[in-house]
Image (cartoon, rainbow, N blue to C red):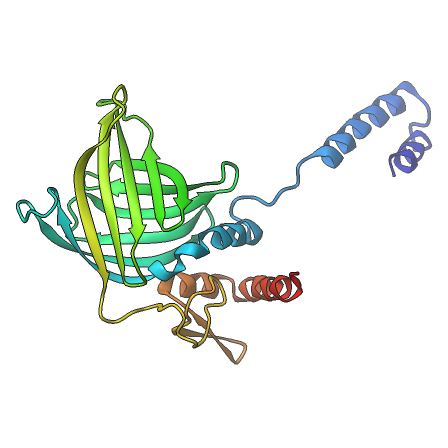
Length: 261
């Protein structure tokens, strides 16, 4: 293709003059850069979002409302508290993940669990009670998600969160920290969560499936006279933002699953 382009340029108005040669060289340089560029999908693209959703499907059962009891000291009610958490999918151009919003919480206001494909690590971006932020990253080991933060600037403390999935309806979050120069962690608190009585996205229900995440579909959405289902308000909003694109991605996912060996 470059040979055809160069011949056309040389035979153009400027012919074989120095100006023609100069223009030819510049164009070849531009074309070389364009052809050698990494044309990966941008972070906000539907393909990149689909990859993140796929990595987070292990946690799709978290969607719903949870009741929590926090304890600074194990088996002690001293300083204990109760809180609620609402969990939905967050599907925004620059943020794809599972979002937690805490009510009456004593540690966080909100958190978004995501996945970084470049490092193949799970990430948790949290907003603390004073509106500062803290980011954790780590791996999933069977039924335990273990995440660590970078050392904090002022205290040099490293925070660790261990999320243990006991069943469809129960999980715990253990909060620990240590100074950067210290090897062992000390307990900050542990919160035990029980799924609220009305489950928003139960696993294995045998009913409709969310066309975005693969979770249980409990909210109907309509496009061009046809009804589909999603698992939470986050997926509903994402569908309404781009129904045609969402359905196209859904069909691609179904085809891959059907043709997988």
